[in-house]
Image 1 (cartoon, rainbow, N blue to C red):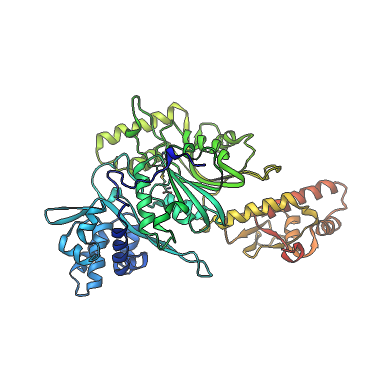
Image 2 (image 1 turned 30 degrees about the horizontal axis):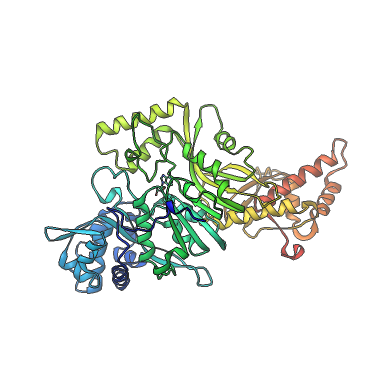
Length: 549
Ligand SMILES: C[S@@+](CC[C@H](N)C(=O)[O-])C[C@H]1O[C@@H](n2cnc3c(N)ncnc32)[C@H](O)[C@@H]1O
């Protein structure tokens, strides 16, 4: 039963796009579709380099590329150029040009929806509205072309960002999108929805999505985006609630007592120096959870089990502090000891306090005033020093509540800093399935095959009789490399599904054993352990023929 105190329905929050005028939203969608204001349409207009530069928040090449296009003889090119300059580059356009580019809604409609205002005969946007899409699956299902409203980004406006800034689709947003393992799920939770990016994707494979945020402005943007894209997302604008519930409140408060099969969150994990007497309106809501250090990530991972149904999974991004003289894993391990959950942390990078301060001061344009920048930078360094922090880790977190009566089957903390295949979500899902398989089956009795993407590398000194190094490499997924012992290399080369693990190990015992120092039991157990690890990491897989899969 939903606590109605948290329900967000109004859609008319001050200073955010209005979503209570369905006819205008339809006109806007129709106009944008007609001029091909899509990811591909914009890329074709700007050209490859200017598009790539815009992807790095560099607007100059796109400004130059579109300068003359607003006078093009081709009305379609002219209209798209006006809209790209208006929204993506935040360059004011004349009322006449906007009326002609978007004839259905016109300038007045944009003003009525809270997207723009008119000042001395020119139209200025107050929010960003950009195309966003993703490709369909191989069977043609699941793709989408949307338009997403958010606050103007740092590169589109002067000055420091407003503290209640509603974030657009950034690198962290798409990292979580690509990390999420997508399968049909009844109920999903998007905690800290922002402009709604995670929810758009969840709607493709979840029957119902609950999207929460502490910011009423963020929920107003999400509601606007859902209704603007209702047709593409297959939502009934008259009955949005049958697919999406928008809830206003902090962390798990709005969903207390409820359970979900999937929880995703790109939470406000940015570590921020606390100042005496500050209130929540002094904080950048989009990135700062208001707690000292990495407290918000700790609080979330320690409480998330309360809203996971048995078998349910949570996938999040986070930062964690690494104190001097400790391993990065120590802190997350400590957060989750005795949690009863399956746990997987992948640290993707670790930066020092200086790099961290620079990144986040630049993110909100707090680097534009020299004196303020110096003070804010110093505050970051003092804050980290006060907790003896020497580094900050960033990465992805996967937590799963075991099914009733089951014990956790994995607890992994690993660092993977090189490029991995994207989207990685399906590979994380496959790894979880392999961990379940190992827990439920006897590895010695299994028949294994080498995974399709795996190759073997042998390196040897010139003239040497045998290779000094034998590696297995994965071409896909997490792209791991595994250094093999001679016997493990021999084992892998015999994995064609014909013999069981026990039979191959027995053959290796007769081949390599026999010496005085040979400890057959230790050899066998060591090999079983290494083989199990190769299965968990996806180098070896149960033979689909033998396992009946
Ligand atoms: C980094 S943004 C993520 C937005 C979006 N989900 C994405 O993936 O890009 C974090 C969001 O969490 C919200 N937030 C901040 N503090 C929160 C809290 N205590 N409880 C719930 N949401 C919060 C912010 O308003 C913001 O929309």
